Length: 494
Image (cartoon, rainbow, N blue to C red; front, side, top):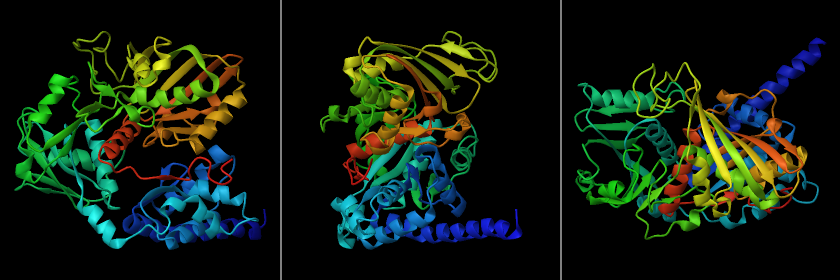
């Protein structure tokens, strides 16, 4: 290879770096001024580095067969910045690829005005200021793995004027004198998800954590009915119980006895009459009268959207779901007593066969599948990211290509695009999905389809993806769900 060719490679790289760098202020301005969240095929672009923006463009090849060029996406951002947009989630990668199919027939501005029409010329500074003043108070009851990831999302979203405000976390007093600093440190550093994106300081005198300017009161309490939130200026709050200790109406109802609490969301499968909601699937079950809701389990959230899509397209006679699940804090580091069968054995050293209620829980969201699915689980020695293997008997025969093309379309263009992602790479492994905020990611390379039999492999970050689903439900409960673009059926989306 000649020196001229070598120089051309480097010159091309530096040019793309410069364009990606120029994208950052546009992404930031759309977010902070208009509360427009931009993404690249489902991957958020807010607060990303130049390299991460370029990697997001590169990732597109796993879905669309070729990398997306910053020369195509930069003009999309520039034009959106001029359209005086209202609040929205906009995938500039999908819009850029759609426009490439019609660029000979339509100007970019005309295309984008049509594609995001419901929010064009909807930005009003006074209305935005008034809207931001009407925030919804959120309290995290418990501060474990899910609680801390929820905190990260809530703090991250607050930067664009999102109306959900994390006002407090409630925990039991630990044994250490520097309990508050230890809580802050666990939020600041995470062995799986990496460092917190931003700054965290501790106000020892007032028992609070300040994360990226968000003042979060730390409340010490021995029970959910023993807190007066109003004394901290918190009122009509949604309490997100991520302890898993209380799962029925009686136990979770204790939260509602505390002044300032209005609703409760459980980050585990609910028992009894509690509605188990899988965002994107059965949100219609939620009513304003509901005071206690569950977001089911991480596995139920991962598989239900995929099962819904497959059921509607091909029909499902019956099937079996096997979960290969990362170990959790419920298990033992070394062999020790545990009330559950097999779970007493060392989690980092063993694959542990256990049970899961996810297969039965699917029927609560998709009644048509009641009694049609069985399920089991294997806990494996990884700290995060799990996989569900769906072995299905279909009513309508499908080839592997037909199944993959359909699921790819679901991930790109359907109403489930926030829940279902799709990847087609022969090299991906579990750690590649750390931080994925989709409920589940279909691995197209692993799909098996032969006649009326199909086996689907669905990856999911059982912490990040599930936490994102929790926030989607909470946002809807607070009346703060924003439109997503491109919509299904937007020009040239096929």
